[in-house]
Image (cartoon, rainbow over all chains, first blue to last red; front, side, top):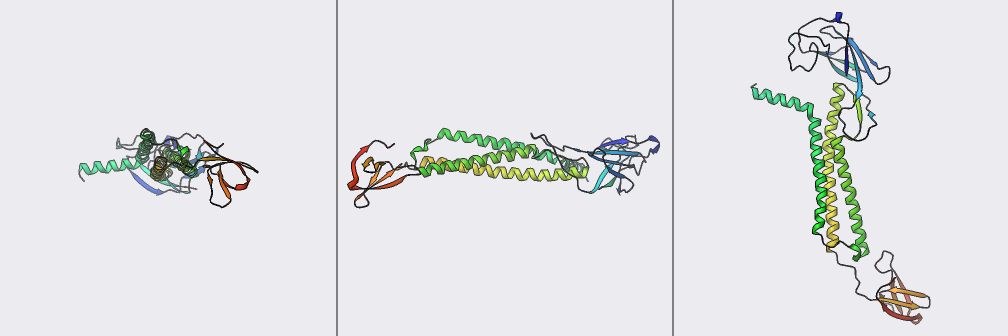
Length: 110
Length: 202
């Protein structure tokens, strides 16, 4: 999963706080033009950062000898996104595993 | 909540994310163990009894060969199951989201556990079959060879093998004695021109 930060003018420097928003309809989930994954785009509901996220297919933990990969088609349903805007947010603990404002939400994968 | 409780809770949370690595390490240990146990079979042959089964009756030879073939297939199956559990069965690529990774990881942990269990059962089965084959080879009596081999010349040709006189007026000759295709030939006594003992039959 790769996140690309949006224009900085969208961003609000709110303090870091773990916040869950449930399913957000404001995010678009589109198939990648090259057919190699999905592109998710929208604004963080807490800090307002514009986020464009590339979801690719990848190897989760195979150590075997065959090299030709079998792509597992994902089931439709909600998927979780953490805000990873990359900006400093006051109060973010060192143990936080995200790089954003602490917000998380779900988008619907078609 | 005291500090120990928090620490245990944190360790449990971390373990949830590392469960596949834990399962893979267990599978690697089992794979190495099963390979070692299989290699140990070689040691058994040091304390061996009979290693030439050609003296046994033909059906015992075939029985031992069957046991060894099935045992070999069982051990190969066990090793491949253990290898698949340790390294992953297929080269799958999943959509890298939290939900997809979690579902794949849980399925993979279940599969590793199942495959290691199956590998253990196949190994035990393979070793049991080898033990059965060895015991059969060691403990079975040799084929009946006390009856003398006789060459019988008669009008229709020549036959060779142990002979019987069960039917009045006939000599029974078991040709190709000891092989799966032995056949008993009944030769009328008045057609026999020569009957003599030979050390072996062709």
